[in-house]
Length: 132
Image (cartoon, rainbow, N blue to C red; front, side):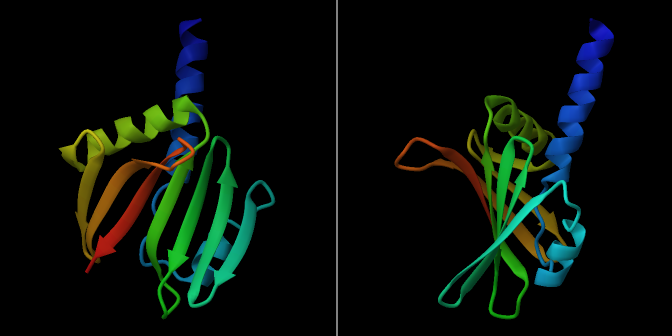
């Protein structure tokens, strides 16, 4: 039983890491990275805004692009409580904790701000934006 738990934990962790934040990626880089048929990839265009939506196992990720075609915001929607908890544990481990629902991460592109929020319908999501 313990071995099964460990195997399931690692499978869960791999899927959570796979759906990680992609900031500064171009539209073609996102499409290329997730071109495998195991991903459900959609594009949406609303005026000047363009996004790519990818469905992973247990999580949906929205990649938003700036006017130059590079990701500048992400929304991660965990579809299960296990994915939600996995992402929170990951952010608590690897990012600077601002509060119970906010984190930040410093990298060469700037500072990433991550916030856990709730929509009017009760759905929880993580918003991720970069401050250059």
